[in-house]
Length: 275
Length: 52
Image (cartoon, rainbow over all chains, first blue to last red):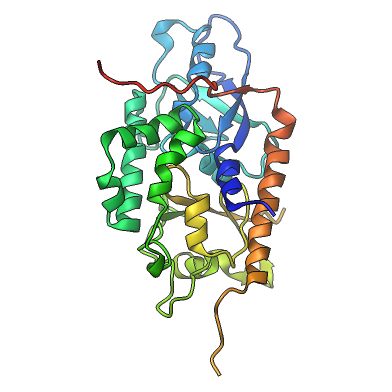
């Protein structure tokens, strides 16, 4: 049987085949071919699309080039969400490759944060890791690390280096054996049908009686409609990294193995189409 | 008689096995047919940047 550590590798090396197409109303000097890339699920759109930017800017005049942003079927894609989460949430029922439209004008100010440089992504990423560690260990592990360790986490993600990232990240996944898990589980639950961007609450990995909390316990507490059944039929899919873990899976194990590099479990609740 | 809520090894194996299987299916679905695509991040030698 495979080792749990293999899960970390599978999660890290998840890729979404993507076809980038320039928005039809962008002004170009000649026609722009689509651009195909394998995007790392655990990374961020604006961190891994330099090639896309260069490709399309070759056919554009400098004065027509504003900040690049991405859209899928009319939905602006938030660069500060991991790519795998964006795909699971908005496009998990689409045929591959994932078709993303590229824009260089009319930046949707109300939907997206600006991303003028990679240092903005780094700041967002590190702030998520710190928030996660505040939940898991009262921030003690991340605060005791040196600046070079923080940099190694970021560089590991930026350069797609699994070993460099996990050499440090494993410390963020430790907990005292007698406690049986983290203080709280860093998670966010997303649903496209909701006005709220996501739900996040304090949730312990262990019951008051010392038993492991499972995914269904978490959903019943935080997002009960996701596990409600109408006429005995499942109405929603609960997806993490493109898979549907069994609802009996302990949340502590999920947090250790299926968290994104920002140390959060990003859980998508997707309505099952009845068409 | 109290009902035990603990997870037995057999149950553990089921959820764990299913995650392994689903990740393997995910690779087949999302990666195997697209290996000819360019990788977004080049696998360059890892270099640690520092201020001199």
